[in-house]
Amino acid sequence: TSCVALIVAAGSGERFGGDRPKQYQRLAGRAVLHHTISTFLRHPAVDAVQVVIQPAHRELYDAAVADLALPEPVAGGATRQDSVRLGLERLAALDPVPGFVLIHDAARPLVDDATIQAVRDRLDAVPAAIAAVAVTDTLKRGVAGLIGGTVERAGLWRAQTPQGFRFADILGAHREFAGAELTDDAAVAERAGLEVALVEGNADNLKVTNQDDLARAAMLMNASLL
Ligand code: CTP
Ligand code: MG
Image 1 (cartoon, rainbow, N blue to C red):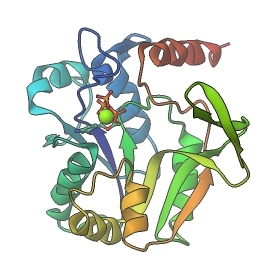
Image 2: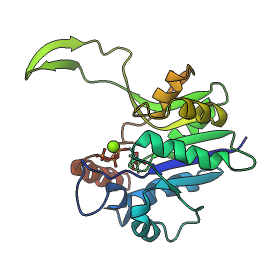
Image 3: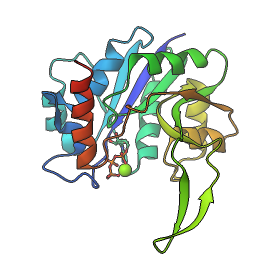
């Protein structure tokens, strides 16, 4: 069964700020987005990669991925959920459509091969599976700068991407719940009543949100060369 990676890169990176959107910032000599796409392109479990971008970023995109063989990017939407749905609609026009789709944030350039493989493998048994990391810190509820209580940590996970799905299932869920303003695709799947498995991912698979995250990503990449 074919498996396509859908990489959403159509955000504006408002929290990051800077001279260009975060997915086009340089990290170890290449654009953040280039790291992300390359990892999926060379992964043996992935048959094709489809990227979703903002048309206003077209020149940045072309410069960032000039050396990679990719299909024409899809134009994204106003929210992440819209961008994913528009990407899925492009894949729905393929003949044949993919069997599986792995949806991934361009802003997670440190995604590793083993996590991709683990999410894909789980799809042989369940309709949906996401990379996630178990919470290890003790959690406090803050109330006006004071602790309002301790939150039970057991059973809590931090959701990451990739998030993998049987293609027909997630396409149907995104069509049904378009505009619901859900922040990840697992939430769309949950809303549609799909069972979603948690796959233990890697804490280093951080999402570049603020400038500190990019510095941390660079540190983690150098550390892995030692
Ligand atoms: N994304 C997208 N389309 C949008 C919004 C987000 O494709 N309309 C993508 C981003 O490019 C990113 C991923 O979804 O790879 C995760 O979103 P987030 O980290 O929130 O990125 P931004 O929305 O760009 O950042 P911010 O929320 O700070 O503006
Ligand atoms: Mg955002």
